[in-house]
Amino acid sequence: MTELHYLQVERHDSVALVRLNRPKVLNALCMGLMQELAATMGELDADPGVAVIVLTGNDKAFAAGADITEMQDASYAYMLEDGGLTRHCDSISSCEKPVIAAVAGYALGGGCELAMMCDFIIAADNARFGQPEITIGTIPGFGGSQRLTRLVGKSKAMDMCLTGRMMDAAEAERSGLVSRVDTVERYLQVALEAAAAIASFSRPVVSLAKQVVDLALETPLTQGIRSERQMFKSTFALEDQKEGMAAFVEKRPAAFSNR
Ligand code: CO8
Image (cartoon, rainbow, N blue to C red; front, side, top):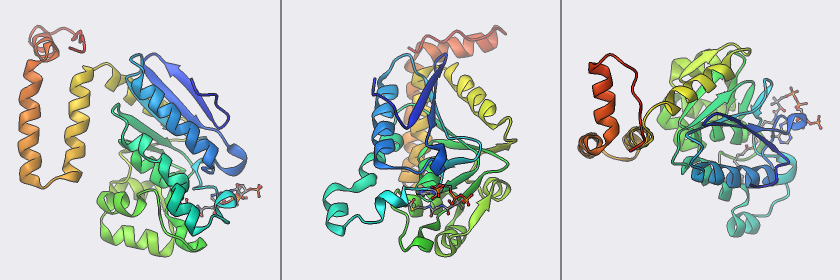
C-alpha cells in the first residue's frame, strides 16, 4: 500500500472511502497528492475486497483546484515533456469499479474536473462548482471543458469557463452536474449508502451497467444501443441473473455470487 501524506483511506465493508486531506489549502491538488491518488485508485481498483470507491474532501472543500503555488512557474517545455499534474488524471477515469464523488464546499478548477471524472456526484447544499482557470490566465486541463459541456450543455459550460463564475448546488443539480443534493451533515452518509447499495449487487453486472452508461458519451446512438443489447444479452450467461430473477419470483432477497 502506498504511504499516504495527502489522503486518508477508510474501509466500510467493501466500500473504500478516499478523503483528500490538505485542509489548510482547501485540498489544492499538488503533484504529491495526485501521485498518491493515482497509486491509491490503482490499488483499490485491483483489490478484490473493494467493490465501490467514494472520493471526498472535507465540509469546506472537495478541492479548490490544482495547486497554483506549485504550478505557477512551470515552463511550457516541462508541461509538454512531463505532462505535469495531467499525467495522473487517468487513474480515476479509467477505474473499472464505480467511483462516487461526495462533494461539499469548493469544487473548483481541477477539483471540479476531478469530481466529474467520477461516475456520479452527490453534493452537499454548500457545494460550489466552477472552472475559474480563466481568472488566473489559463484554461481547464483535466478534461473540464469536455466533461462539463457533455454534462450541462454548451451554454452553461461556456458561461462557467468564460466568466469563471461558480454554480451552487441547486443549480448544479438542476443542470445535471450532480445526481443528488443533501445537507452538509448528511451528504457523505448518502454517498456511502449509495455505494453500499451498489456493492450489494452482482459485481459483473455492476461493471456492465457502468460500461454501458459510459458508452452513451463515447458512441453514436445506434451503435450504443446495439452494444447495450449485446451486453444485456450477456448478463443471461451469469448465475447472478438467474439468482436475481429467481429471488424476485420467490419473494426473497437475492444472494449474488459475482459469477
Ligand atoms: N492552490 C493553492 N492554494 C490554494 C488554492 C489553490 N488552488 N486554493 C486555495 N488555496 C489556499 C489559499 O492560498 C489559502 O492559503 P493561505 O492560508 O496560506 O493564504 C488557503 O488555501 C485558504 O484559501 P483562501 O484564504 O483563499 O480562502 P477563501 O475562503 O477566502 O477563498 C476560494 C476560497 C474562493 C476557493 C479561493 O481560495 C480561490 O479562489 N482559490 C483558487 C481557485 C482556483 O482558481 N482554482 C483553479 C486552479 S487552476 C486549475 O485547477 C487547473 C486544472 C488543470 C490542471 C492542469 C495542470 C497541469
